[in-house]
Amino acid sequence: RGRLVESGGGSVQSGGSTRLSCVASYEYDVSRYCLAWFREGPGKEREGVAGVDFDGSPTYADSVKGRFTISQDNSKNTMYLEMNSLKPEDTAMYYCAAAPRYTRCSELFRNRKREYKTWGQGTQVTVSS
Image 1 (tube, one colour):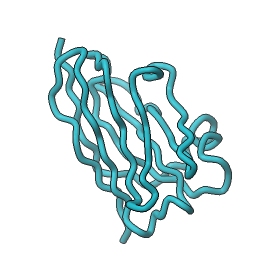
Image 2 (tube, rainbow, N blue to C red; image 1 turned 90 degrees about the horizontal axis):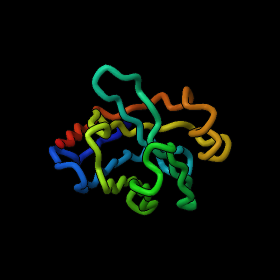
Image 3 (cartoon, rainbow, N blue to C red; image 1 turned 45 degrees about the horizontal axis):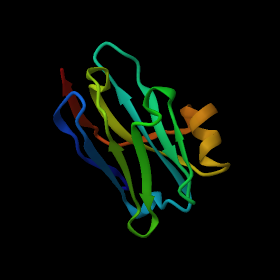
């Protein structure tokens, strides 16, 4: 069965940086699926962080614009999230998710987040002040 596997994260001081990776198995080939990052902070609902299209076009939540950078290596079926200028409010479990690509990934990420139905196990990012 196909899956998504996240790695990276850990404990970081405020203002610091870290990088997350998500490797998608071949069942979730990025030519047919849109990948995105979501997070769930303590006591908060899960929210979209960033999505990426096959051509590398990114879409970001307002809260991370200018600080986070999403990218994708299509040849490796792998997505990344470079996280800079981290804040304590970025503390969360970060999840990789996949949605079937039936429209532009930016459209899915902005308006159809429910289409992301395949999830990784998550990786924790903790930012201390």
